[in-house]
Image (cartoon, rainbow, N blue to C red; front, side):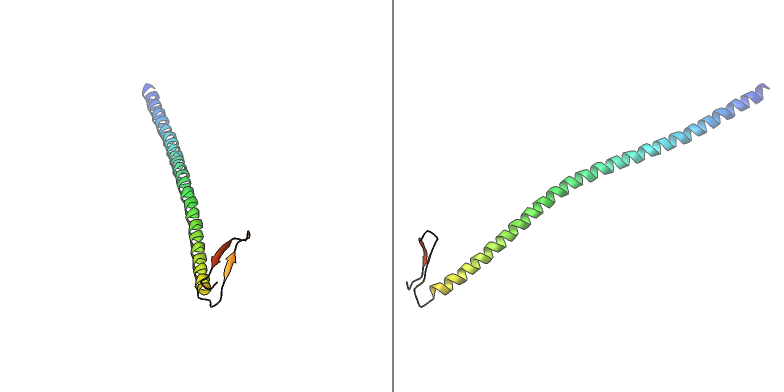
Amino acid sequence: MTLSALGIFVLSVWVFAFLTTRILEQDISQLVADAQVSATSQIAAQLDRELGGRLVALAQIAAFNRLLHSLHEHQQENQRFRTIADNALYGKSIADLQGNIVYINRFF
């Protein structure tokens, strides 16, 4: 009887250890998965902040580029006007809204 009781005890300890090991493996797997999700979320948030800042910088660069392009077009248009006005065979002048003369060609 003692030997069978000992056998039942050993078997029950083994079953307890087996089940405990399975539960611990599941818990550790869940903890690892949670840690991976947390780390991934932190990395994603950091990338989002960095890329958001870069996106703002790119938008500012694009706006500045459009402004430079517009300025260049206006300078070309102004140069075409000056070439035409300077080479006209008649006098030409331009005044601002206050009546101040801002341009006079050579024939004026």
